[in-house]
Image 1 (cartoon, rainbow, N blue to C red):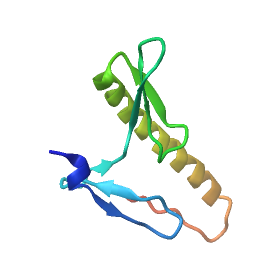
Image 2: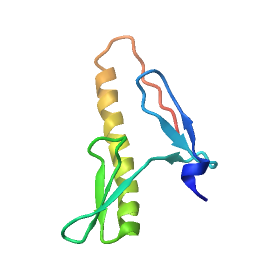
Image 3: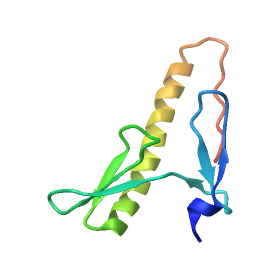
Length: 97
């Protein structure tokens, strides 16, 4: 399956970045792969600033960047939750994606 052709963009509230989901409702991110001078492959997720990983080859870099995406999203969520708790009258709600 070509994810780029099957991905459907969805948008949240104004200012929220575009997300794509494939037919299985899996979140899809564009990833840039670049061969580093040391021979490793660097994988960067442009939609998630600072979300970068690497691997010995393309396949390993892509597997590693999936973990990096999960960690990036978790860390950003933790920062947001910490910020919400300082605002009275706002109750965070958990939503599974």
